[in-house]
Length: 374
Image 1 (cartoon, rainbow, N blue to C red):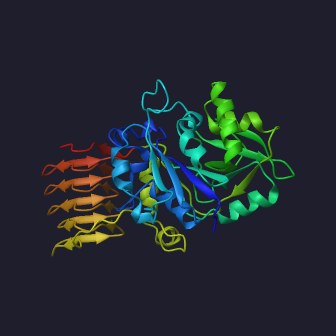
Image 2 (cartoon, rainbow, N blue to C red):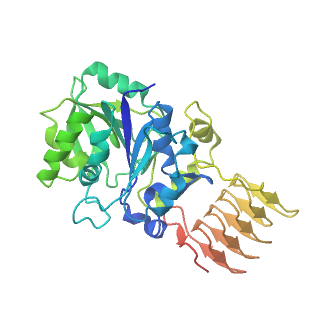
């Protein structure tokens, strides 16, 4: 387990194509798999690696993120020394609550970085969903003598071939990254950057200060790409599942992927468990005429109608004669009698009137915003 590293998670990453889903919450607070949040994945990966000092960089709409993290007790990070620290925005002069790039976010976190007692920093982000400890990655980093190690995975291995606002690597014979392509329209490269890096603390401080002073605000496209010849930057492959939270369609896909039993076992039943804030509630209740197939149902739900290939978060009520197919329903939502919904995302506290019919598709699922009524 890693003992001499602290973690830094970019929980304030901007993904405007998530539309209504991030109007009132940060990307890190996005609900995943009926009981989890996006922040749970990078945070659990760090805890499973033995990291006990984690900073979470927050941006706008961070109240739900802070509420979810609390004292860090659910991740065993409620400690007198170290633990979890939420780094709120507005610490940089002239800040509007959002960051123009990862370098500016790191600059705003400089006080936390400087005062960290550990030698190495592991940086991660909330818009990639994957599981795994960083022990092997750290071992490779130290043994290779690398200045920076970047985590990547090969696209297409799990049917994921997105090319949206992403970075791809190419490698030389010595394993060093020698080409970085940012957001390419067409590329032959398949090694996709997962925005997870290992770097010495002193080197991180130096590079962030240099890049920020030059107005170079992207971590990969600026800081890494401009130092390919100056530093030894290598890659480390993650071979498991990777989901993305870039837009509504990718958010929908990540949740629907969890209906696959093999993937569920890989993510939630492996040795690298995903931890989350525990909330007690009564078991789900299935009424006499209910039909539920291939779905995830959280505690507190009441099912009277038909639910297929869907995910229901806590305390959802599906009324009688309702047909719900390929839907994601956030907590405290009421679906009225006789409604027919397919490829729909219902945010928290939504009310669906009796007899409502809403039909989207997998590429363009319909979204009903928080506390909406249809």
